[in-house]
Length: 217
Image 1 (spheres, rainbow, N blue to C red):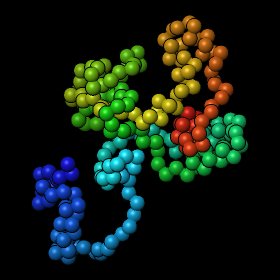
Image 2: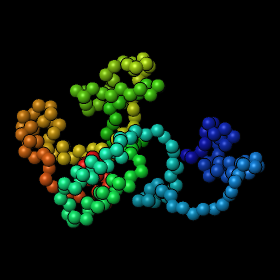
Image 3: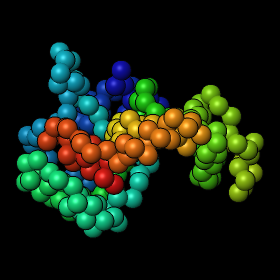
Image 4: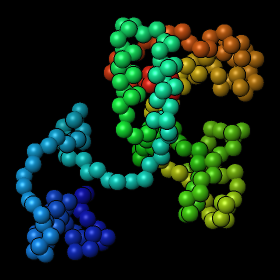
């Protein structure tokens, strides 16, 4: 309900906005407040598509990333080989690829989504699922080993789910029955060999930076 718990120390029991005011007061009393002024800025609301307009509190949490920035040149090179209609849509992809400030954060703290096939120990060692066991949900499925093979600690499931663009980016593989093909389905193998790579991608210009970009990546 937005009330700070005992970890907030002297601010426990206060609402977030109340705590902000109290923290500013305490800093001022200690002579540590450099400046206090009103600012106007646009913040996300929960959610702008509904009647609830409560501000969203941004919580710093550890996330999972995939390296993307190291492959900028390769992504742009492949994108040049694609026929874009209209042609200037290629520039949207190029500008996005060359202006990214960080890598692709692929984790989400949501209820629904594709699970990470990983377990971790308290020391941060990662144990992935075996390829032959995929797909798995670590919340319900057992890890491939009982203990961390590095330090022997207990393993805990990764409860984050994947960014939706992780799934969407492999749609050319999904629609050409790639997964069935690698599992030995002969009909799927023929379908995949005949239809992959796909020849057409109709999509909106607003998701060139996501769907198109991550598919090319």
